[in-house]
Length: 171
Image 1 (cartoon, one colour):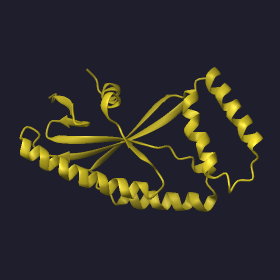
Image 2 (cartoon, helix red, strand yellow):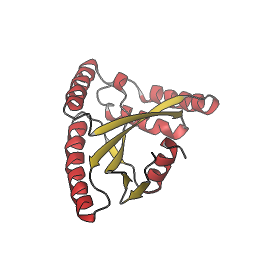
Image 3 (cartoon, rainbow, N blue to C red):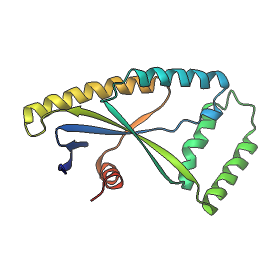
Image 4 (cartoon, helix red, strand yellow):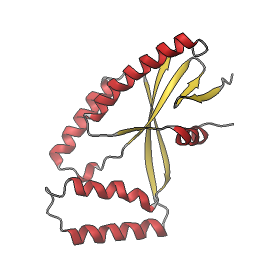
């Protein structure tokens, strides 16, 4: 049975639930020092263990890389520049080589999305309001846990949420 799907106040309304969608910022684990990698993996394990299975869904999408995708990756170097002994000329050359590689080849990259769901009776405004309040508390808790691992979350809103739905649903 197909249930109606709609968007209201940057939330997906579906059957008896409301869903908030967040994009996870990528993390370049290999650029982190080994000790930080271990801490990140441990923190992420603890974070995922603290979330109930029914609360979230993680979706991964593969798409072709674009030159502007390099900005996030290259900004990672700036964060650790003080700790790194790599000279700026080497980073500049690396940036130029990557840009050329992406412009000449199809390079797949992965994007991760976190869907946070709250069950509620969406057809009754009082129940919907309670559901939104519960969802906001849940999002805050999950956001704080994930943020503590160093991963950023950005809510998908407006036209981007429309595009997200089109990408992941079939007509």
